[in-house]
Structure formats: structure tokens, C-alpha cells
Length: 433
Image (cartoon, rainbow, N blue to C red; front, side):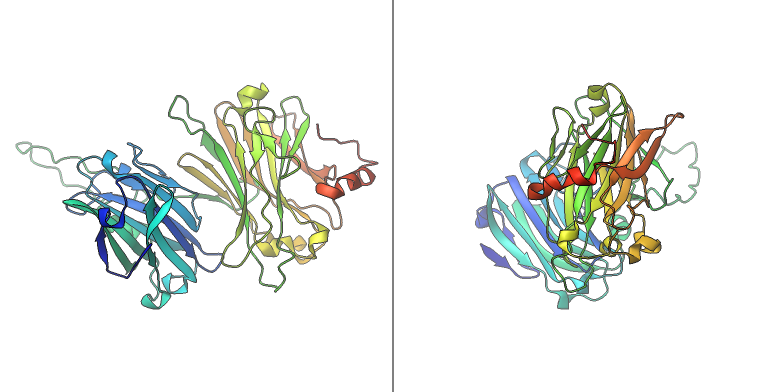
């Protein structure tokens, strides 16, 4: 593997990297709760974003030709871009990979950062970032792949004042949230100017209050996203204890007939292609200030059709008493739902409620969703279990067709402790199927 210094350039061929199946792996660590967003700008020979569809980022994770694909999730600090340079349109001459920080941190706060370039499962070159090279910049141009007789690599490492919107403008793009300047009408005798590139929406929908909702539309046809992805994340609270940072993402599912299903890894992981058409991808047991823990559930977008009607879902995080006493609120749990380029975050601030001071409150509801054939309605929740209670969140359909959540579902334990649930549920008539 070839180490690259800031400003160093090389051809891909001399590094032994082909032009198909190129992988650019970016790893960055910044202090929580700040997050990093990664993006790729596909530029023309003049260094301009002449086609906004080649700006690959959290709202647009792939170029239309599929030759640039971001493999990861918005806010992830480890993300891989998979490239087919041979498949790019002739007008794309440069690919600039950038990072922007959302939150109080800046580039000087990077505790770990590097970019690796390779193909076919091997790493051919690595560019390590040095925090001392930066000050208060909120954006960083990491590396660049560019065409000059052949594809070449430059380790840029250039800090940039301003965030993602400023970078987008720098490359000639236009942010959708901004109102365009009024245009002066051209004389009739002159031809109309060429149309401007479409505006790019940089917004990530963030819901912070119970009752606040957002509707995600489900797409139809062969090009529709294949998965609905839900991720719950939390971070170490800095209390010098590693044993109490282990939360579990739990999912309760209200079926069209009113029965409830429960998903949790590893004992009740579920299935994507059969009942319950949702699967938990695995238990994560370690979190730190710089590397939040994330557990992921994939939901089949056709779940309502497969189930024969709309489905309610409640997403919660749980801290077992055996992991050690901790205020779950202090771990700052949030959830993010992704469907294609639609990204919605539920980020209720549990530190503002009384339960945040009680380390015997074990379950926190971070989001509620209703999925029908046309879309998903998502909302955050501030619901928690009662002190000392092992009850899980329970859902019911209301007479008006809405969703009601309560904290009186049956207790569930995993692994060798599973048999404990019977004594907790003796007087509770509720059961999961």
C-alpha cells in the first residue's frame, strides 16, 4: 500500500488500480454529537457541477448511470464510494470527494481520519489526515480523481470555510432552499439563455417533537429502492464506564389484525422476505464518544401488501439492568429512516424530561411509523417505561384509524435470561405472536 502525502499525485495505473470497481473508503472520527456527511462531486472539464445528478450525497446516494454509488448512510463516519470510471459520461472529468461536519466540531477536531483507494478487495493507497493542518473549517476536500490522458489521483486535503451548501456553490451548484435572484427579461430579439442546472435539496428532515410527522412516499416500478432502512444510534456519555453503553434496538409491529410481533437481535431477528418482512441486522455492544453505536433494521417496502393492510411500528432502545446503571437519555439515542434519497431523523431530546435523571428507566421510544401501500408516516416519541419496569412498548389501532402507544407490553429477555419473562408477564394478558 502506498502512503500519500498532502498534495501528492499519482496515476491509478501506477498504483495498480483499474478503472472499474474502484473503491474510495473514507473513515473520519469527530467528537459526538457532531456528525460527518460525505459527498462526491462529479465535475466537468471546467470544474463545474454542470449536471446536479452527479452530486452524490445523503439525499442522492447514486449517480443516474450508477457509476458513482455511496455505500453507507447519512452521517456515517465510515463510508465507501464504489466507482466505475469507465461508465461515467464523457463530460465528467473530475470526482472530488469531500467531508462536511454538522455540529460544533470542525476539521481541527478530527481524532482519526484517512482515505483509502483500491479495487478488487485490496487497498492500493492511503491518505491520512493531520488535524494540525486545519483550523475551524467545516468542510474538507479529501481527494480528487481526475482525467488527464488517464485517470489520476490527488491527495487534496484542502480545508474549506462553510459547509456543504458553500461547497455546492463553489462548484457551481444551486441550493434549493435559497430563493433565486429575480431575472431580468431578455429582449424578444435575443435567444433565450440555456436553462440553469436543477437546484439541489440539502435538507435532511429532522423531527424533534411528539406529534410532529413526516410522510415518506413509496416508489413504484423497477427503479424503486429495495429496502426501507431504520438505524438507531447512541453514544457513550463520558462516564468512564464501558459496560453501560450497550443498548438494544427493539421493534414492535402492529399487524393489520391487531396482533403484535417483536423484533430484537439476535433471538428475534425476523426475516425480510417472509413474515414479519423486517429483519434486525445484529446486536452492537460498544459505543464511544467518537464512534456512536448503531443498530439497523431493514423493512420490506411491500410489507403492507404482504400483510394485507397497514402496519404500525414502534422503535425503542432498551438498556438491560445487567449492563449497569445508566441514564439512557444521557446516551442521546436517535433514529434515522432512509428510503432511497428520502432521509428522516427522529431526534427527540430525552434529556429534557424527568426520566433522564432516573437510571431505572430502561426503555425509550424513539420513533413511531405507520406503513401503508403508498408510504410511511413517521413521528418521534418521548415515551418511556416506568421506573423499574421491564414492560415493552405496545401498539393499538384507534377508532379513528390512528396509532396509540402505551408502555404495558410483555417483558422480553434474550439469551440465557429468556425464561425470566414468564414471571414478569404472569399478570399481563398481552403477548407477542
